[in-house]
Amino acid sequence: MKNLVLFISFLFITLLQAQEKPNIAILELEGSGMSEQDLQGLTNRLQTEFFKTDKFTVLERSKINEVLEEQQFQMAGCTDLACAIEIGRLLNVEYVVIGNVDKVASIYSVNLRLVDVSTGEIIKNEFEDCPNCSLNEVFLRALKNATHKIAGIEKKPPVSEAPKPQKPTPASTVPQTQTKPPPVQPFVRRPKYYPRFLMGYFMGIHLSGSVYQDDYYDKIEHAGGLSAGITYEIGFTRHIYLKPELVYANRKGEIKDYYGDTYKTDMIHYLHIPLLFSYHFNSNFSLFTGPSFGFFMAGSWETDYDEGEYEEDELINSQLTRMIIGTEARFGMFYLGYRYALDLTSEDKYDDKMRRQIQFLTLGMMFIR
Image 1 (cartoon, rainbow, N blue to C red):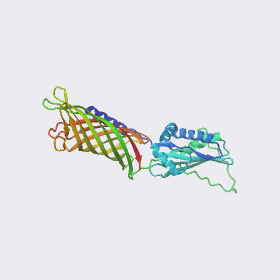
Image 2 (image 1 turned 60 degrees about the vertical axis):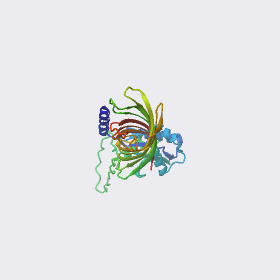
Image 3 (image 1 turned 90 degrees about the vertical axis):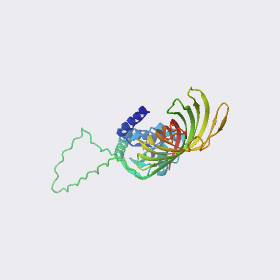
Image 4 (image 1 turned 120 degrees about the vertical axis):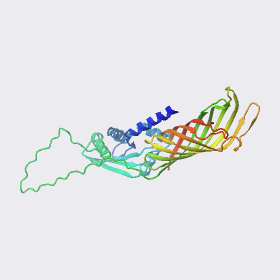
């Protein structure tokens, strides 16, 4: 157990020190005056340009299509802001980029919008016009310039471009006032201090064993069971969440005597209420810890010559407290979790040493509210 705690602590500190980039998804570009094939090519190029800025973690196109197919989401007719936000929530990203490329006469106009999925707010809206351009110039230059405006990257003139000497103007000529374009605003991830609510459910399996054996008492050699529950997450910042849960769990164990012979098997049912605190490093990975309070529901036992039901006041404690530490990895709406739990109170009413350590493996689905 000591090595496990040291390893998780080291992992926690290492990940805290890592610089996290906001994750975004580039949605299909809309447009007019060009073919669907050209728009598809421009969308792919736009995704590459955002990746090259090194300002964002860009979700792969194949991953976007995979998640939308799993959710049976129809992209056809999805052109408004609300639809883009719904896609962003399904993809579990912080931002989505939507936009359009329109051709009017000999002018191409590129318009990109950066949307905060949590608030539905358009936090950047940038244009790049390309007069007398070919589609190749839009592909190579206009998309790059619009992307740099979203990312807050200043446009630098070529090194070979030297300032041209200005001719002296006659006194009768009125000098023209030259105005510099406004500076590009750098991209800054907006803090989210409002509450954010998530809800989901999960199922899992667990294995456990007692943490002691002496010369006089029995030992739960091994025990396994199933668990299922409802989980809530209340986000107070982008990283810190409160994670209350309501969990049903059972366990079936073999109880052995001092000589290692199994003389009794039992099944116990509990209702647990974990109150956890979760730290989200990004939208795909989190660590959590906190206490859990269990309440005895029912139980039964069986031997070679007898069987019966556990009574709440007979052998089993009616309340059970344990400490939990765990991690979750998310894949869209689904997540895979691991948690380690250590009993702080004994399961046996008459022996305070009968405490267990449990390892849970869970699979769940989370909804954003």
